[in-house]
Image (cartoon, rainbow, N blue to C red):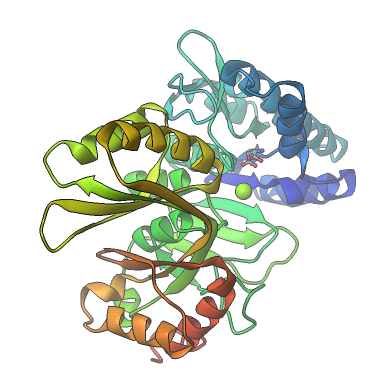
Length: 410
Ligand code: ASP
Ligand code: MG
């Protein structure tokens, strides 16, 4: 009998009835004779509620106190699930991050896991108890409570699976897997049975909300396959795992979109060494993540226009910082646009197929969608477009790459 690591998201433990349902699922795995560790998120909506409380109280809530606050959501759900398990006659123990030594760095609200001490968990397994672990949280060397960023319970679960040597990390959620595009946007979306770590990494960071990006990085690094399944149905599921030959047959595996993008353009920037550093260093120092960057140098080579994107939540801050620098550098103007979105295609098959970009651009132009920015990696192409065309863009690309047909058929 092996070690089973399961994670249940907020919607799966969103009510007492659902917690009882989850307890039964966990109980049946336990009764099969496995050592079971269950990672749980806060009850649906609870983390949002706590964040709202803080923001209503203070315009700039202290990050340390934020983590003390938001980590309480998981404390509630683990206690309730452990109680429900005990009612079923299953010995269970709820555990906060610090109790099982989930050590992190001290970046409050987006901490990284450094180490997990498996001793406590091993003892719990020896005592034949189910470990019900709070996701999303950890502890620093100085005993400060940290959280791992929104959606961080996925990462807690994958990290646990890695250190415990589980064969797979099971992630239970309100969808039955990863789809070729958001099924709410296009009914032709198809569930993928299997996807590579690299593809999932791109999809997660490009806006597919099924898994936290960090969890996929972790899974890839330690080669822990992730099985995403619906809590409430035994059907379906998507396995994120090592790449195999089948995966390369398909040029594009999925289409993602992300509305959380805003564009800032600096006009008339001097084209000389050091200017880009002067613009982007203060953004980095203020913890603002820059996504795409493009620079166009004018024909005479003296001035350039520089555009980049940030998340909508960072937009106001980024704009203020950039305006200050642009003034000092004597740039012509700074303009911003929050009505943009990013549309991307992802697939490991792109490495070995030509003409993927041109097909994407033709498909978008066929419905009159203008491309504002482009960025590529080995296995993805992203375009920034007007936000109001994003759903149309998803559908057009889904048709162009025939994603309704399954892998190998194309
Ligand atoms: N409760 C946290 C959140 O809502 C962590 C998680 O659900 O994974 O972001
Ligand atoms: Mg989640």
